[in-house]
Image: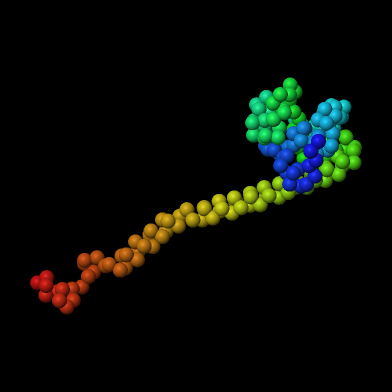
Length: 174
């Protein structure tokens, strides 16, 4: 069984499904050092500890999308059962239900990965908000700059009435 023991490896297992960041049961089982079947049995025995904001089952379309987009989950394609998706809270609860040293140790990495992603999303959201504010400020600048250029042009080239004929111009017109 491949060991995933770095924060980066844990981050790679986090997917975005139904507006939630989740880890699929087979990935979580690998992280916690158990078989997927063992993890799912522990979840079924303790289902009351997993409300829907901790855990949900993928539907057929979601399973297909996950298999299509995540090469490491290709084995799910041939599975008859739909996988579970664990939210951040669900991953922590799963570690307590399994109660193995590895699960408890790895749950720290899992939490850190979720927190890191949350911070990154916060920074991205702040950046998007700043860009939107800047865009709103500059929307009228084109109109204002054009008006400024028009005013400068009027100052530079006065109309015919305002123009006084001087020197040679007066003689040429007469």
